[in-house]
Image 1 (cartoon, one colour):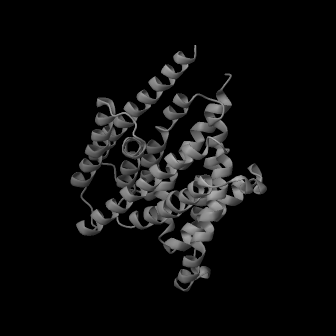
Image 2: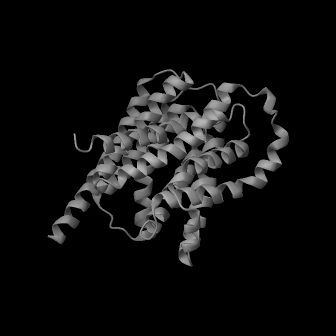
Length: 302
């Protein structure tokens, strides 16, 4: 099959991205949030380094510098910190469902900040995403205190707001720069941003007491989900239409949901499927909108 290798890169890239949700819950069991976040972006940068030329950072001028700084502080540091803190209070399944609402939230941001056209399909996608999260919130019965659970949900929602900002600022920046460069440079700047807080939290950790399994989870969380995941995804995206790439984005929430059962040993409940089905239906609508836009652009060029 002509594009088999490309499709596999897209598939495994999204599988790795999806694994970040349950892994973010696992790493905070032994690592303070800023230590875990700092190591995550540092490992990601090390993995991305062979695919970029560091001297290219000098090419960023004016508005591009501000966009790169925004991506680093909002999309890398902000997302990581909010996600790690949020996942302390909610289950991996709940986090997975909330994360799957990212495409719908990105559509909201595009409408509000970039004056994109609003349509009934976009409205339906956004409504389905909100409904799915609400179903999970009112249908879950956990041992955690409701106040803590609500705080966790709000933090993860704030994290996907950062993710939406990362996507939209990245979209503007990729017009002039390769996405691999943006991912690597934002990770490097993100690590510099984490550094003072890592030093502040260093007294809270006893490295000799941390198990090999915890170090392994942290390595996958950084080098795998953000590092290798970015490499596979960007190399695949270069070779396909945007609509094809958007379809593979649907793999991420499925990966997050399934891995939450396996990695966190969380019990299956039918309410999970109900909430996930609502949110994923919104994802499908967003994908169809994206596909139609690409087809219209192609027809206009003919």
